[in-house]
Image (cartoon, rainbow, N blue to C red):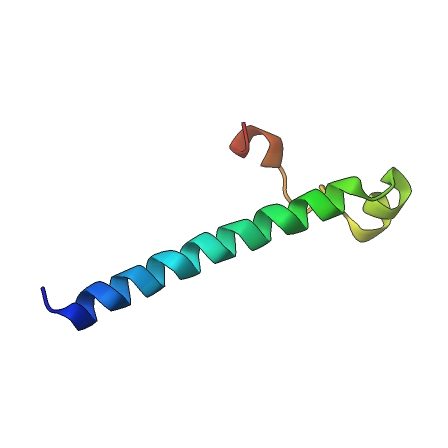
Amino acid sequence: MNQLTILHSVKRYIGKVRTLRNEIRTERLLNSLPAEVRMDIGWPDLHEGWQQRHK
């Protein structure tokens, strides 16, 4: 493997980790909202079965 391939792989991995962290942060933020607001925006109804996926 040359250095460019390794660097590309590391950048892609870091991008995936960053995306995952952003998704978790967003989910926490949405879950911290009052129930009435979550119901108005359709959270978690938009993600049927999200609790089973996150156990």
